[in-house]
Figure 1 (cartoon, rainbow, N blue to C red):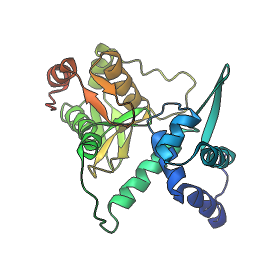
Figure 2 (spheres, rainbow, N blue to C red):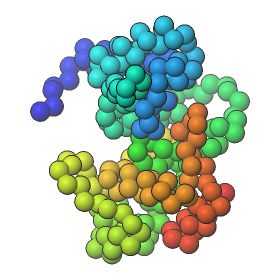
Figure 3 (spheres, one colour):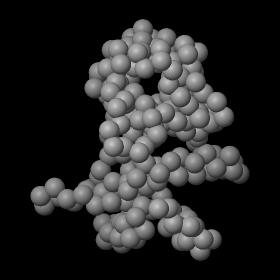
Amino acid sequence: MTNFVSGNSLAEVAALIGDPARANILQALADGRALTAGELAWHAGVSAQTTSGHLAKLADAQLIALEKQGRHRYFRLASPQVAEAMEALMLVAANGPKRHRPTGPRDEAMRTARTCYDHLAGRLAVALADRLSARQFIILSDGAAAITEDGYRFFSDFGLDLDGGKSTRPLCRTCLDWSERRSHLAGRLGAALCQRSLDLGWIKRGKDSRAVTFTPKGIAGFRETFGISMP
């Protein structure tokens, strides 16, 4: 059962995210991967001791979760909803007052293709949603999405397993893209498309960024399979 959220509860979570170091930590984890405290200290730009305090606060608020593997400790986002909240906040921030900051290659890479927790975002993801809709493999309407019978056949032929088992996660839904101001695909379909692209070697994750890069095989694959031309 979902708890009723009071203004005080909302303010507490907002205050946690509002700290720049903690916001950078959550951003670093927004691609769904688990990172060590040392890696997160680098992303946060603060000392290891300070990072430890931030991680404790985020864990207490159930925004992040701790995973242990032997002597190693890793941190990841507690749920896809935290990543969605960060993406929504990025959209709000992008629409806010303009602040001068030189645009660099990393900005363009993030806008071209990136991960949003476990699904794709950026121009690539929006183009995917457009092409799948145009070919009537999915139906997009007022922020919702559904897969057609032709779509199920296409995704099966592409190697996707969309059987959710006991998962209560939506099969197909949309997520508003902060950089494109349009919707990309999330849910189990979005996650499956992202993972299949990684498995095929079409895209590669970045080391220090959510941006993903295209391989020559991927450029050809997206063009031939989906009719998408990417740089």
